[in-house]
Image (cartoon, rainbow, N blue to C red):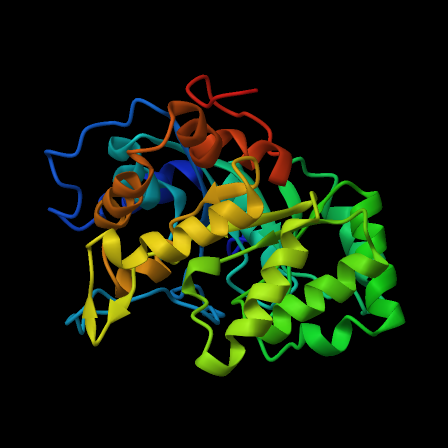
Length: 330
């Protein structure tokens, strides 16, 4: 595609903020949902705009049964949904393999303090990686990169690539995080090998509750969890919790408790973090329903655990910077 330098020219904050608030569908946020007593940092949202002249390689999830086009995903739309739920900040995770979209999402994030950080999309084995990394890391919102089972990439092969490992070492030396995409057994094996060779890199494993190993993979899964759990720089994102079971979306927390318990047991109270996966999650349920299930799960746990899960652990995982007075700080 043709390179661009941002939001089709200058970012007109007043114009698109006012316009996009108006695009929030009525009735999505339920009036009975009360703001959380514990502030929440959502570590997994996506920003994109498929209406740009160049389009977008990803355009979000569509609510069950809907045939309507998906809406562009900008911070004001997310804020309108999330703020009534007690979510006070979010980290935007890459939704595009186009290198110029790192700049685009940083420019969009800069317009709204709801976004406390951005996980970009750079390929550590590329010759230009060091140049791009040095450029983007000057922006305090740029927290790291994502790489995994996405955009045709294969972390299992790259974990043996000396050039890729050198790039990950550069990332670690810069104090930035390496986030995975879409866990599989092979990806977990690759993370073990990767962190053997670059032990200083911080890693966030995304969507781990969504990994349902096949019967023949269960032994390998348990072995890998045990190994990953020993590594203090690896964090586990309890995102992609709510899913379809036997073809139907289940909002019964009992359906998810065993898997969540296993992940918390593995990574401990200090290395599990919350993420909604909005708006990809729209294909399953709106944010309030997803958060309601998660809150049911943590309801029986100590307040200290709930604080760690909903915001405290996100700080050592991502090293995001507070941008608004209502955002917590350690």
